[in-house]
Length: 395
Image (tube, rainbow, N blue to C red; front, side):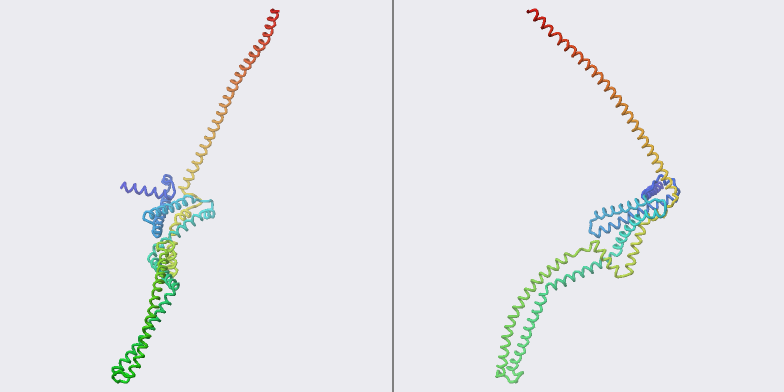
């Protein structure tokens, strides 16, 4: 039981920290305040979970690896939770309802924007099978359009195929005419048709000449047309190879189905085709807008000119901290002033000692200079007298 109690206390401290409140001060507040801020922390944690799942799914759509998906989801979840926590901590009573609403409006707009983003991502996940069908349909249309445009660009193929059909038809017509004439002169020879006289009479030779003439025409047409058909087929094969290369290049240039923008465009096409689907898409987005903005709206609606117990204690603590800070600043200023005074006194004392020492040295120097001057004067007086006496004695 103690383990469950410790876990419950840890969860409670964590949710209060997410709500941006001081847990120690909140413990001394009424149960209503504690429950309110704990619920706000739960909403912030829910924002983290939703952000992690949604942005991980978007990273998966973008084709990222498992590690990148986890990193993107974790960063996005922490970012959304930090935004919600910051917005709730800084949302305070501004003196009047008008000022409070005006100051909180940017915060509400931020949460609504995040809610729209999250709701759109959830719609991508909810309608994922339909989006895949729409993407496949769009890709099929694109491929059909590519094939049609390529066929139009290589229209010579169709012209050559029609030419081959015309040449084959000429051969078949001439072959059919030859077969009729062949049956006619064979029947005349056998007596089964024509004059019905057995043997090779004049009529037989006439029909045989007609058959030989048509046979020569058939051989000529067959040879000429087959040569033309062979040349046409060679040209058709070359054009078809170029057309297939063009189609393959165009197919490879088609984007994959893993792009986020392609999925969003497919979702727009899919939902725009049905009013009911569009309604549910809007409802999902509005739901997540409401969920994401719930912490800020709850904090905004709980504000009042009369602060609650927790806010009163926080304000008292803030004022006490401000007073203590002011006293600390004043003490620091007094210490600084006293230090400056001592420094000036010490400077004066040092300057006085230096002056006295300099004065003593100056006096001593003056005495020494005076003594030197006195000795120099005495010497200048005594030397000439000595010279004079010496001269006088010599004389």
